[in-house]
Length: 121
Ligand code: FES
Image (cartoon, rainbow, N blue to C red; front, side, top):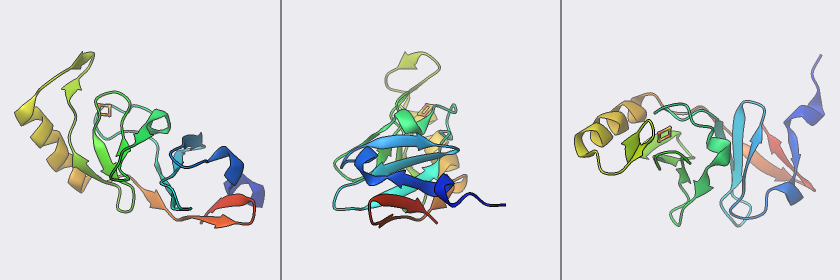
């Protein structure tokens, strides 16, 4: 039995620039009703991307080491800046993780506005 309300989120909870957790998904609004839903665990060290932010390019930025994701494809477009508790330059490591993140993409669902809700399809 499916629960249709399970994949609906009040649009009022997703103002432009917001990212929220919804089950296994990080759901956000890039502005102009451009919503997205991607799987919630960062490909680097599994940070919760629902705590991330949206940058000026519309990418989802991981809260831990600032890896950037294209939310349309789930691809990591820029690798982490640091690892574990360290935050700072790690050039070769950053490139290596970004290469892995291009292959091991986040899962992506369509998220569209339907009346007062955002629906995950
Ligand atoms: S856990 Fe996301 S960039 Fe490190």
